[in-house]
Each structure stands twice: as structure tokens, then as C-alpha cells.
Image (cartoon, rainbow, N blue to C red; front, side, top):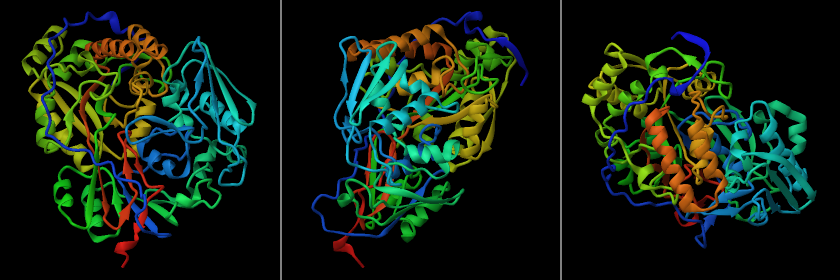
Length: 540
């Protein structure tokens, strides 16, 4: 790859004419089973739960983390200001109620719980909340900055209230505070650990961090200081790192792990028939996609620069690549119809979805070749794609390789460890990268942070003033229909420029032992273990 240090201008090459779109074909019918709370079911007080976790989390720091698998662990040890319920609604967690917003939309005020403590005994109050939010906003390596919008100040006028002031209205803020931007860290631990907080995280949670052996396991134990300790039943949770899908399935059958996430579509039907196991499943707010490096030369968040490859410099080549992907056939054959095609960052069930955001450019390899001829590039166009070295991802990559070959592309697959891929996307040392996103309840979390100019997760270094303006308009509006219309228009820009080529949407497949209850899986992609328990009527 030859990199020239000049500002990238995406509009410098004429864009191909708009192409007709078609609705996605219906996928196989599956029914959600999100799990159930313990309720009145007799359970054992105590016990050690082992989860087979499909990938290694990154550093356990809410400010810097970019990994879904870190969210699995932190859900048990680091509560947020807000959370999601099973219906996808936002509910208070460490906040005492929903926020109030000034008539001009520039001031957001919320109360926080009082009389509770962090796992190290430090009092939890508004000042502690302010400390964490300020770190999310200003820490040099923060991955949260763009999630918090045009925030200008964070105030704690008393122990029970926090006031956020914005330069412009920012309607996604409550949703952002229902994710990592809302995780509140002990100010004492932050002062002691600084940038190393993620090595020994301390928060408010049902469990507290107990230790980590890299690439092996993360341990958490029940926190006796937790404010709702009466609803916590387990003594300890171990998150055992198991990237191999066959190994996770075998350990479920043997009982060596009691729950495992991201069950492969190759294994799920057999596991669902095992009377000792139970399948939980949910649709996803997220997507899987292919990020094209169009301008990330100096690292994520830095000003974009020109990258002199056909895929990076010419949107016609990217459109040709997108047109060569037979999404429907790939998900049907690789994933046995458990997953569904995706062509945009907006999940179809979202209230912010629209016909424009649901539309999908058709598979048309002949058109791909015409676009490549129009762009004047020799075929086959050689492209290197980095992908995690797990069975399902590699299986999909190989099928994708065959699909795009029909359109004139020679796709070289470069398998790497998941943790390595996270570092690669931050540094920008890739041409094409296959990786997904677990999704957020507000579309801003699926769009702006990845595609806004110099945003904290704009790994491809894409820059479009037109898209920036549409996304900013959407973030300022509180009208759902208006926001849906704006995200539809944004999708049309994305599908024209193709900085990310969306490919499929997973169903969230989690299997657990029938000896357990209280495990829940929501559409945000996180398996919730904090209230789980071993069932008493099956003891022994």
C-alpha cells in the first residue's frame, strides 16, 4: 500500500449514477427467547458460574474499551447510569430517574442514587459521576468522546444531581449513558490507577473484579457492598476465553461451562435438542460489515489522508465491490439461515428504520465489472482483507472471496487474532477489515461514531461533510419520524460512498445449562449473568 500525505477529497472522483435498490428477502423465521428473571423459583444461594466467552476482552476500562466482550464482563462489575430492559426501553440504573431536558434542549439534568458505595468503599455520588463523565470526555485515549455529543460542561450542584450542558441539542445522550459512557468508576481507584484503571477496575456492581489471566480467564466475585445484594445469588463468575466454537459446544455438553455466547449456526440446532441445555436467542441491534480504509493513515481520530489504492481512492471501485456480494446466498449457505442480510447500520425493527434505510443494492456482478471498467482499473482488483481467525468468520470470508471474484476482485484473506484486529483498526494498518458492531438502541451509536469525520471509532478515516450534516441534524431532533427520514438519507450517502459495506446481522445465540435460571440476553448483544442462579430443584 502506498500512502500519500495529502488531504482526502472523497468527491474528487465522479460518483456512479444511483442504482436501483430492492428489499431484502425474508430470512428464516426464528422466535426470540430472551431468558427470564429468577422470580419465585427456588434457587441455591452461592455457586460458581463459568461462562465460555467467545473472544478475549480488551482492557476493562469503560473509557477506552471498544470490545463487545468487555461489555459482557463489565455488565456484572460496573453498572451504568441507565440500562436497557427486555423490550429495548431505557431504564434508570445508577441514575434515580429519567433525565429532564430544558426547552431549548441544551441542558440535561438527572438525579443519582444516594447511600451506595463502590466496591472499594468509596461513596457514590454526583461528584463521582462527574469525575467519570469528565474522563470519558477528555481522556486522550477515550473511545467515548464522540458518543457524548457537543457536551460543553458537566456539573454536580449537589450530591444527588448531575447537570450536562450542550452546545447544541443532543437527543442520543440518554442512550449513550445506557452504555459504556454511563459506566461510573470509583474516583479513588481512578486517582490511584490513572491510565492503568482497566487492569484493576473498581465500580458499583453485583460483582467485583478479582483477577485476570490474559487469553485464559477473568474472575469476578460477589460484592458484599452492592446496594441490591439480596438479588445476587452466585458467589463468583469466571469468564473463560474460548474462541473455538467447537470447544465451546463441547464444554457446554460436558458441563465444564454452564453458559456460552455466540453459538455457531453449525452447532446451534444440535445443542437446542439437548435436554440438559437451553437456547436463548434475540435479534440484534448491530451489524457485521467490511470497513474500507479510505483515509486512516495516522491512527483513528486523526485528520484523514489520501490512500492510493483503487478501493480507497475511487467510490466506483467500492460500489463495484459492494455489488459483488451475494448477501442472501452467503447467509443462507454459511449460517444455515440463522442470520439475515444487512445493508445499513439501522436494524429493521428500530423505530428509526425506514424504507430507505432498509433498502439493499442488488447483487449484480456484471454491474461490478462495468463499474471497474468505468474506473479504469485492471482486473482482477487485488484486495487484502483482515478477519478474526474463528471458524465462522473464516467460513464467511471464504464464501465472500468466491462471491466477489465473480465481480472482478481477487480477495486475499488475512486471519488474525481478535485482539490484534482491534489494534489494527485503531492504527489504520489495513486495506479492508471484516468486523462487526453489537449495536446501540439509538442509531447515533451505530453511525456517527464510525462515520463522522474524525470520530473516535471512524477506523476507515472516512470524511463526508454531507453525511456529517445529516447525522448532526438527526442527533439534534427529538422527533422519531424526522430522525428516521434523516437516517434514511444518511444510508443513501453511505451506500453511494461505501466506506463500510454492511453484510449481515446476527441472531444472538446463547446456550446455558438447565441447572441455571436468571440468564438474560437482550438485543444490545450482552449476556446478563448478574442475577443468575443455580436451580434448587435440580441440585445434585
